[in-house]
Amino acid sequence: MRVFLTILSLFSISILPQSITFDFHSPENIKKFADYLFCQGDYLRAVEEYESIKNINFNDTINFKIMLCYSEIGLYQMSNLSEVRLSNSVFKNEAECLSLKNRFKESSNSFYQLSEIQLYPFSTEDSFTLNYFNKLTSASFLLGSSELISEDEIINPFDGSETKTIASFYDMKTNPPYKSPALAGVLSAVIPGSGKMYVNEWGDGITALLATGLLAFLAYDNFRADHKTRAWIFTGLDAFFYAGNVYGSIAAAQIFNARINFEFSEGIKLFLEQENYFLPQYDFCN
Amino acid sequence: MTQNSFKLFYILLVISTSAFCQIDNLKWQKADLSYENPNNFIPRNYSFESDDPVEFVTKSFTNAYWFFISDVDGDNCPFRPSCSAFFLEAAKETNILQASLMFFDRFTRDMNFAKGPYHYPRVRSGYFYDPPQNYTLNQGRINYLPPVFIVDDK
Image 1: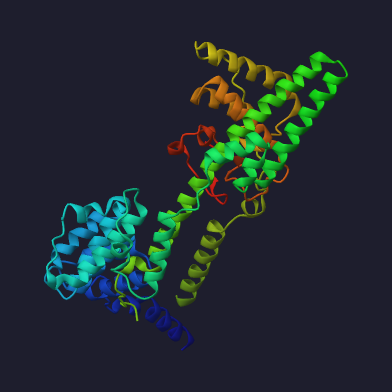
Image 2: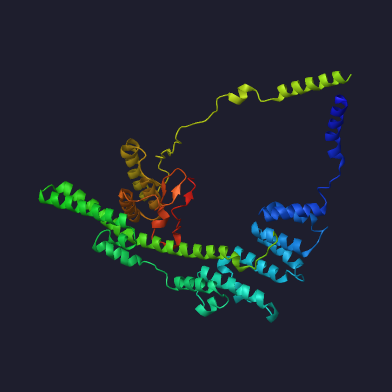
């Protein structure tokens, strides 16, 4: 009896599971798996699964998800290819916005040129997309180095708290808190190190003041003691430190200004990321 | 018959388990780990590669500095490129006078004890990254990197 039960259990364990047919590769199950990957943020693998069932199980949601996946993994041109298939679907507006976002991500600093060459002649029916386009154009103007358009034109497409943030970015763009390299140089020429202090490099400024001051004192002391050779060595060294400090103060002011530019553009990019590039919210996972 | 089958099954199980198990020698053998600090020494290039007389002068100064001071003193410069390499690169980028000014400015910044860990970006080996391109007074050539940034040594 025991032997019989053992054999029976061994057979049932090893044979029965295999006998149940479960088609992991049916389009429905591939879609379920792709949806799972999509919700986990694994867009690379999700898009591969969606692509494999796109022609069998065609629908707008899958197409839009493919577009989203490609956009998330940075394949913007592939993403925009899906837009054509969604031109008459319920996702028409969303797909157009996503396509514009892709174009913005590809060339954020020159995106505003699209409006200048009127590549997108929107009709009045497309007011949603037009407003979205204007938002990205405003952001592009702020990021780019071209002549800024008026504050009203920049702010108009936005509403609510976005307006306030964009207005503050506009103020920072028009009145950046730059430091003058010329003034930094002049300050260091008058009092060594003060130009560095002016650009908030306090440690470097104090070090420069001490170094030039100490070498000047050594030169003076050696001249007074009639040690001409040493005195001239210290004088020469002091002259180089002094001139180097004036030069360095100008360079430090330029680096300070480069930091302002860097923080400004990073601030805008962070804001755009936080706002998800003003795209409408989709909820495919809950 | 059944008993023989079970015996055969157990024998096969025992043989396969023991044949394919992880042997003790492999499991407990000494791991080849190195606890030495990585050597960040950059081999000196003393050769005079260029025919340019200005570069010849700067290279002579740098070689003399390396031979008589730097190699004896050890690797003490907290920056990459080091101050002498900075001078050489600056001379290639600009001219000898401007390079000298850049070098004395760099030397002053090197003497600053309050540089702090959050002032310059770093290379992977931990040194402050401070390239001469940022000091040529050409605003377009400045590549500002935030202090949290880690630059590849190469």
